[in-house]
Amino acid sequence: MKAYQLVGHGAPGKMELRELPDPIPAAGEAVVRVRACGLNRLDLWAEQGGLPVPLQLPRTLGCEIAGEIESIGEGVVNHRIGDRVALQSNLFCGDCEFCMQGEESVCLNSKLLGIERDGGFAEKVSVLASSLVSLPEGVSFDAAAAVTLAGSTAMHMLTQRSQVKSGDWVLVIGASSGVGSAAIQIAKKLGGYVITTGSTEEKRTLGKSLGADFVVDSTSPDWAVEVRRITQKRGVDIVIEHVGGEVLQQCFGCLARNGRIVTCGATGGREVSLKLWQVFVKQQSLIGSYGRNRKDIAATLEWVREGKMRAVIDKTFPLAEVPQAFALLRARKVHGKVIVKP
Ligand SMILES: [Zn+2]
Image 1 (cartoon, rainbow, N blue to C red):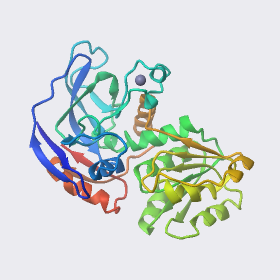
Image 2 (cartoon, rainbow, N blue to C red):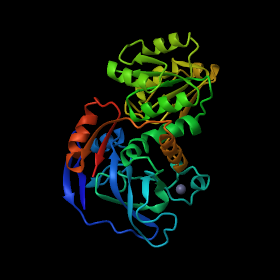
Image 3 (cartoon, rainbow, N blue to C red):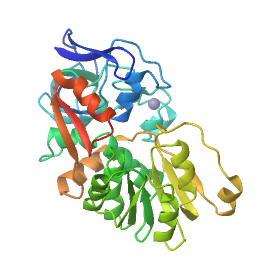
């Protein structure tokens, strides 16, 4: 099979289209014919060698995968050859304390698909069959590859790590990002008033088209003041944040009393200083959110099937153009997801 592999770190990293042996499913595993694989910031981080998890080269990146089952190993009973599936990229053991509670995203033995094990920028990928989630009829491979990781991350943040109630003010950072574009739609459907941010007119227009009530220019030094002004100085109840660094710090300035910031990323910086006095006097919370559980993926795909959420796809590329897909994401000019179709 063909796979595009990262062979040297950098920005751009060194990548090669290689011919590899077809994966053979071990007991409990399934081999999936990859039909679509979404790109994520995580891939850029891995490309640069900046991830705080071990990454051995060469490695096939790609963690947001949809396809159909090509073969199954011994003991696989819940899925059949030909089934259309999406993949849970938080690979989990199924046996630890947290997996037993259905909280596989915090599995004690977790591994990241496409980082610690070969992923989806390839014609085929093998995983434990327990990592497969069935695709509802009518949800395309492209749509699934656009929401399985980022969309379900947003679902996890808004329905599990925090619970948006009708009438809540929700600030979504980055309207055009994968997490942001899904979070706007989820928060609106749950009855929230949504404010979102974007660095260009196009990104802010996308935010509006996804249902945001207000959009704010994130390049303005006063964007956080603008959020407070929109809420008549009250502040927002929930912030969906995935940038970290200074942006996260500024989010505290947008937060109402009893407000929660849910964060799932730190591309903008992993160290942040806090004004603790404000945090406890205003009873604010900073909540970490890591990946998703299969139930979040199933819920997200179901929302897509019902038309409650739409996948926002900027561009698709064939497998042979993986480096071009990375370049587009690196240039930060995308509006929605970039998808590779092996
Ligand atoms: Zn586990």
